[in-house]
Structures are given as structure tokens and as C-alpha cells.
Length: 225
Image 1 (cartoon, rainbow, N blue to C red):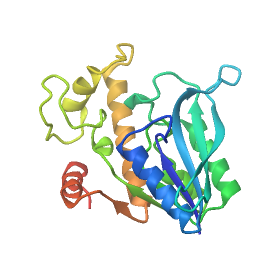
Image 2: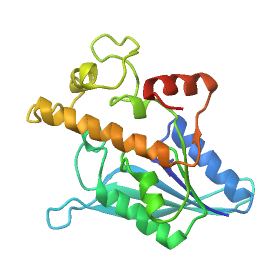
Image 3: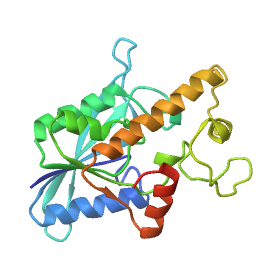
Image 4: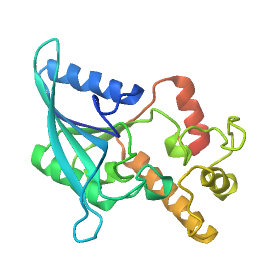
């Protein structure tokens, strides 16, 4: 089976819970004889194309230490600044770069572990390429612009539904701030973000969570199964 795993980073450049989970999954699949390609975000920046937004793809390799079987690691770099910011979660050049990978690899399935640093339309991109996708929701990013469900003014847990109130004020405290974006424009950006992420979840063949409790919380926050 040909499998593409997608995440916001991959070791050794970025090492966190999701990144290590993806590495372990990729190596285990390769060790079982599957053809594995990892597509990852990166902190590196691509060069802009004549001033226009762009994305570049850099290839590396990893190996299952138990069997020695190799797998590909493709890092997609964005040309813009502050690409982790919630207002910039859609980046068509990164989606186009993923589409190019899918046309080249022709995988049987895409497993999206995260959208950050890439683009929020990864499942839709796979669908347009005729590839089924599943997603794992490791955190609360799909239901919280700052990902952590903690209020930025008090560090208290947030139980509010995603919306103009309180999300814009809460996310607005996280740098870099964007005072040039009007409240009306910010409200539209938030609505578009949640619309696109809802479409991602609807298009996914399966929605996976690391625990039942996390799943119940996401069902409540996203108001969907």
C-alpha cells in the first residue's frame, strides 16, 4: 500500500508529540513493507516567485531502525511570514505542492495529522486528486484559533463555541497582532476558517482521536459527530 502522512513538522527539525507519533507511524508502516511518504511543514521559508506567494518542496529520507526500510520525507516551505497565525491557515501554493506530491506518488490513502504551516484544505486537495483521506485530531486547533482552548487573558480553560465572541479578542492577544484587519474582515476570516475545516472533516473517510474524552470534547466544541 502507498501511504502519504501529512503533519505540521517532522523530526529532527521539529520534535513534539504529534511529530513523534507521525515518525513512529511512518517507520512502522515502512517496516511492514508499505511505501510511505511523509509530507511535513517546516520553519524554513521558500523564496517568493516574483513577489507572489510560493511554496517549495525539499526531500529528505528516514528509515525504520528495526528493519532498515526507507521512507521519503518531503518538507513544504511557505514563502510568507508568520505562517502559524490563524488568519493565514489557507495557503493555496502549499495545497498545490501537496497535489503535486499526490500526482507523483499516487497513494492509496492520505492521513492528515495537522494542517498548521501547510494549508487548511489538505483533505479537499486529496479529494480533488481522487485520493481518500483520514484525519487524526490531536488537539483543539479545529475548534480554537489559538489551538489550546485556554483563554489568553486568564489562562483558564475555554468552553465557548467558536465565534466572533470571544475568539477574535482572545486570538487577537497572541502576537503578531493585526490592527490593520478590521473587525468585519476578521469575523469573515474566522467564519471562512471554520467553514473550510468543517468541510475537511466532512470529506474525511474517518476522524480519529487519541482518546474518547478528547473525542467527546471535540464533538461538543465542533457541534458534530
